[in-house]
Image 1 (cartoon, rainbow, N blue to C red):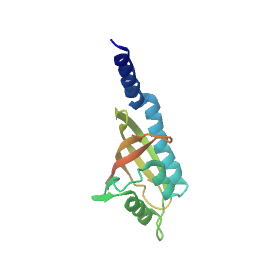
Image 2 (image 1 turned 135 degrees about the vertical axis):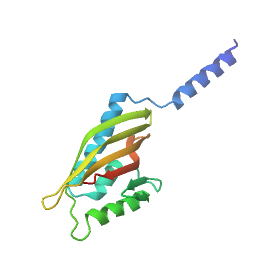
Image 3 (image 1 turned 90 degrees about the horizontal axis):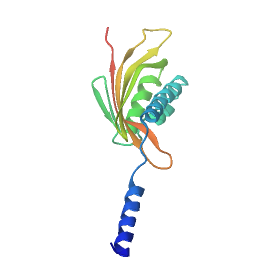
Image 4 (image 1 turned 60 degrees about the horizontal axis):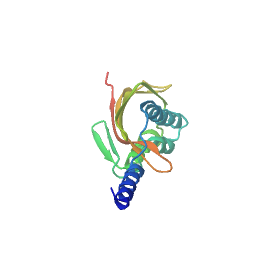
Length: 157
C-alpha cells in the first residue's frame, strides 16, 4: 500500500470516529431520565408550571401531548394548557407524585418511560392516572433528555 493510500485510510478512519456519538450507558441514561421526571415533580410541587415544562419537555412546535381526548401540539400550547388547568382562577395544582416508573431505552438517543401519576389535594378527591413518554437525547454542550411525546390518561372511578 502506498503512503498516499495509507494516509487516506487513516484520515477516513479518524473522520468516521470523530462523527460517532459517545454511547450512553444504559444505567446512566436511565438515571438521567428518572432525574428529568423527578425534577418535573419538584418544579410542580413548588407551584412553577413553567419550570415543570422546561425541566422535561422539548421546547419545540413538534412536541406532542395527548390527554383527555385532546391532542395538543407544541411547547407553548402545552404550557398554556397546564396554566389554564392548574393556575388560572381558583385552580389548584396539588402535590404531584410519580411512581411505578419504568424506563426502556430504544436506542442511544431514544427512550420510553411509563409510570403512574397522582395529584394530592386537601379539599377534593385525588386524581391519578398513567403516562407514557417518548424521550429523545439531544447532544451538544448541554446534552440532555427531553420529552417529545406525552400520552397521559386519567383513571376513572
